[in-house]
Image 1 (spheres, rainbow, N blue to C red):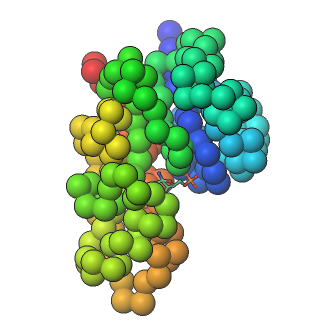
Image 2: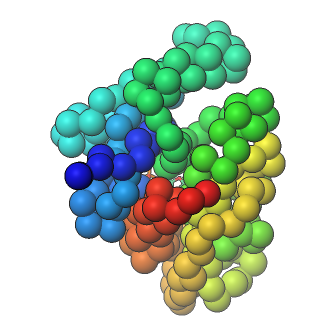
Length: 200
Ligand code: GRF
């Protein structure tokens, strides 16, 4: 019997290159799960177009329009229930989830962060800022981390990490791109398969 596997929701806010990596890995690296839903908190996110092109249902939930964090999470809960979601993946999702929400989904939410946690992580470390900080500190190795999400920003249990070299002449943009290509886009599909195929 062919099982369709665990049902994954990917939460996005922007370009969605990590979402694309996950979509492209379905059927190869990802065998025990399928992307059943994409949710964006930003109606203009290019990630929504990627979902549409892949034929995956997509919803936009704007915290601004819904009026509060609680209303946003209530609407999100309803979507997740409607699509019978087993796991959530945060792929460039720029909204912090409340402790109530993360407790309810304990060890069922993954996030990807573009550094080797515990370096350059936590409040204020997002997007290019992470790579700016790594270059300013002069580290020779950086990378990406997939971790479970709890109430501490970037503080949950680490599932996978991959190191990436910092090269002479790097700018934050060059380093960001190398970390994505060499680490993030590989690590996230692997982490999803690991979680979906495990007995956790
Ligand atoms: C990635 O660097 C990811 O690590 C971080 O946000 C960025 C999202 O990029 N959390 P994209 O939207 O997947 O292209």
